[in-house]
Amino acid sequence: MTRRSKAAGKPGKARRRKTARSKQRNARKPARRSAATASEQVARLARELHEAREQLTATAEVLQAISGSAVDLQQVFAAMLEKAVRICDAKFGNIYRWDGEAFHLVASHNTPRAMVEARRRSPLRPSLETPVARMVATKTAVHIHDAASHSGYTARTDPGAVVAVERGGVRTILMIPMLKDDELIGSFSLYRQMVRPFTDKQIELVQNFAAQAVIAIENTRLVTALRQSLEQQTATADVLRVISSSPGQLEPVFNTMLENATRICEAKFGTLFLFDGETFDVVATAKVPPELAEFQKRRGRFQPISGGWLDRILQTKQTVQTADAAAEATPVSEARLGGARSAVCVPMLKDDVLIGAIAVYRQEVRPFIDKQIELLTNFAAQAVIAIDNTRLLNELRQSLEQQTATADVLRVISSSPGALEPVFEPLFENATRLCDAQFGALFLRTERGFRNVRPHDASSEHGESWQREPELILAEHPHIPLAQIAQTKRTVHIADLTQEEAYLEGDPLMLRFVDSAGARTMLIVPMLKGNELIGAFGLYRTEVRPFTDKQIALLTNFAAQALIAIENARLLSELRRRTDDLTESLEQQTATSEVLRVISSSQGELEPVFQAMLENAVRI
Image 1 (cartoon, rainbow, N blue to C red):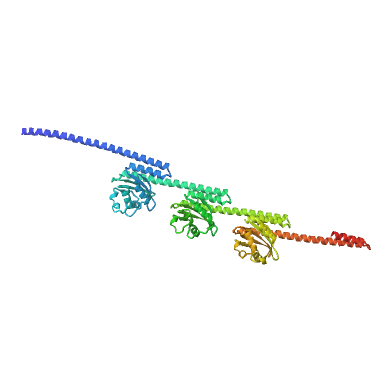
Image 2 (image 1 turned 120 degrees about the vertical axis):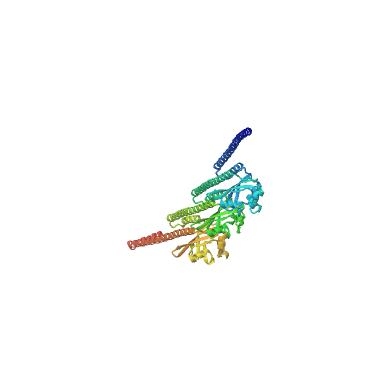
């Protein structure tokens, strides 16, 4: 027992020693593992710190690019993509803008050329049950671990996935939506050409870049809007300055408007039309192609073709915009000869009456935006103001000229009583100048017709013919305009004398008047004393251009002044005749009284009587 006990005790001590050593070894192992874990944590923390610093640096650099390039989105997008691709260990990246129907590629970094070209040709359109459609619907990130095994690619139902895999070699895709006030405006996308999903921190970083891209876009929009507003205000001020510095002159105003409109609206050329109620006329142009400019010059005033831009303006009195003129059924000259593709035409309205239109054109398909149309509408309103100001100023000038001319004629009438020549000279000069006529004539009514008493500024040949035949006998010329005056005692206004019956029938007087004197447009106003026709006052133009209502009223006034001068001369002549008759009668009575006095004072003596008679007879 004892020996067994000792023998048993020794092994027991050995086991205890082994157990102790084993415990010591076991106690040392956790220490080594803790040291290894601590080392890994330090390395992880160092790596995370490095990544955080890299991300902060990238964010700072992007923000610096945003602040330094407020309107250069390409520069900002390029900086964002380069840093996102590098930090997230991607192969390449793209930024897309969403227009409500498709994603359009606006920036890329290291993207394969074939994929870029495919995206440029065919924007990324979300179809049913595709990752892109899911992002549009949910406005959340889409993370595809392996695009090549995705059903959209394998079944070839997703064109975007097919392009990405086959043109870009894409396997892993990360698409982050770009949101402004919960509105989708684009996508920030990274791609890997191997199956390796992005980490949560990388996804978070790309989300941060997407938010910064939205900030850059908004900053650019605000700065662009501010610049556009400043440009528009400057252009408006420029036009108003020209209006104020060129009173009564529309050409410099229209030219300034069109120059500013084409520049600010990024148009290739522009045209300003005026409308007279029946036809349009090109009154100002800016950078119009030569072939179109030559056509506009030859065409002159015109009526718009049915269905064309100006015809639609005329029918609706509303702005007409064309995205692509080549797709329209009606071929307008601006498209045929000027190469116009996108165009906008704005009406010029005064009290809802169309008085003209301003149009600008682009030679590529790029529709004008609302702000550009708004600017053009503002210019149209300014053009109407300029036209109205010019009209009022011209009316004031014309009224002043007419009053001055009337005062001048009345002054001559009062200072030259009975003398018609001094009166007719300023009368004709003022009438032809103010009514924009080439020559005129004054006719007095005779028993058989009219007598031309004063041709003015007619050709020498025509003036000599009037001197040879001063009287115009109506029985020999029954269809001439003066015959109408004699019959109706009303104003006769003929736009084109070559269309008159007397000319067409070969009346020699009309042929001489039109062919020799060059008269085309005629205005004759009757000179009436009560209901009695005293004569007529005529003005003539050597071009077909009718007189205006104001010019007709002015000539009627001049005719009345001529009648006053003629009547004054007649009354003065009558007064002088009567005075002469009275003087003669008085002298005769005085002579008779003298002879009777001699007879009564010389009774029986004939010699003094005869002497007195002879002296008075010789004197009287």
